[in-house]
Each structure stands twice: as structure tokens, then as C-alpha cells.
Length: 175
Image 1 (cartoon, rainbow, N blue to C red):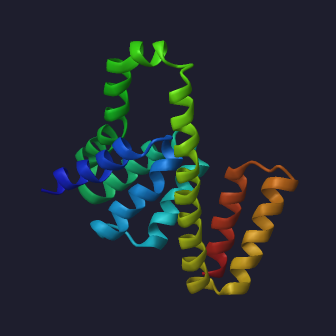
Image 2: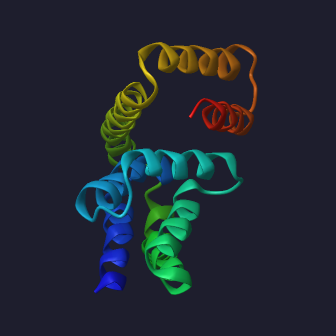
Image 3: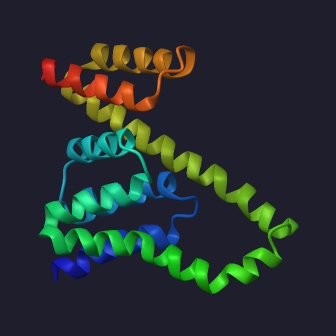
């Protein structure tokens, strides 16, 4: 039963999560944290931070790690397949159709409607992380982390992996 739940926890978000890894993260978080209770929000945010720090697609790294934590090596394989399987199968089946209609105004209009929804989902996930951080370390440290991270990412143009590793190191020292 765990293998089926693990498959569904990653298959469903990747079927309905239009926009790739970042769009599916809030959906995966809902499945892993709220629906099945395999992790807390804090643990999920740490997995997300680690997934962002490593090269490659975020969703696949998260699926492999969470699958391993829940059901070992075979669980890792199942979660990873559930993450990439839908896209691979659909892309192979629909490659010709996608190529024919790639410049269609309807397809472009669909994207213009979906992208704001993805932004809202990512914003909600960010707010959840801020609330969890405020609860764990307080409002002032959360605000300092947010401002310093923003400056390092947007003004200094430091690679996100360095900001994440720095945040993990500071978090380890403070907590």
C-alpha cells in the first residue's frame, strides 16, 4: 500500500502541475506533508532547500529523497518514475501534435492563464515557509534572513546554492 501511495503522491502533482518542477512543488508538499504526513513542513522545506542547492531538476531530486525516506531504494525508484513518467510518456505520444500547434494563439493564451496560477501557488508556499520560520526562529531572524537573502540573490547576484548553503550553516549554528 505504501508503494501505491508513494506513486500517487508524486504522479498526481506531476500530471496536474503544468509548468515543471517549481509548479509541482506546492502540490507535492500538500501530498507529502498534509495528506500522507510523511514529513513536517520544516522537513519538507529542508528537502526543498537541498534540492535547490544541487544541480538538476528539483522535483526529481525531491522525489528520490522522499521516496527513499518513506520506502527505501525501491520507494525512491517508484517516486522518481511517478515524477518523470507522465512527462516522458505524454511527450513521446504528443510530440508531433505539440510541434504542429506550437505557434497556435490558443496554446499561447492557455499559458498566459496558467502562469499566474503557478505564481499564486509559489507565493502561497513562500508564505507557508515564512510562517513556519517565524514560528521556529522568531520574526526578527526570519526578517533578517529574508532581507539578507534578497540582497545576496538580487543585488550581489550570488548563486542560489551559496545562499541556501549559507542559510543551512547559519540555521545549524542557531538551532
